[in-house]
Length: 153
Ligand SMILES: [Zn+2]
Image (cartoon, rainbow, N blue to C red; front, top):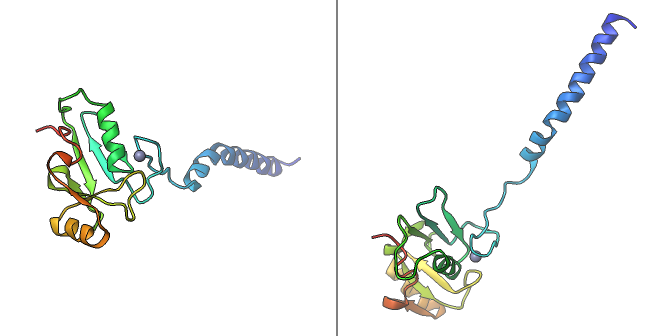
């Protein structure tokens, strides 16, 4: 065997080793991105979360529905007390933009409701009223508003 052939053989061995070593990297790059799941029930959040809650922990918690987020809040709260640093962000049903809890108008309706419940959030009162006028339902005001005592003042 000549020195040149030995060199070629070694190059193939190194190439094969590198191919095997980088296989996991290539495989993970080809895999579709991990889909975000609801922190309440584990449902895959197709189209993004309906509710996002931030608190004292570094990561936020995403939810499929208002009711799912409310159940999570109840399970992660001291009764009658606001959790430090907790904030609720909701998806505006008309635009998909994220809005703050204080700015949200809530409507309960059966038509085309998000999975798990029929509570929708709107940034504009006109959009909430238009949804009720078109699809039926109820504007949730006062004590009927979701997430009482959820956010820090
Ligand atoms: Zn959920």
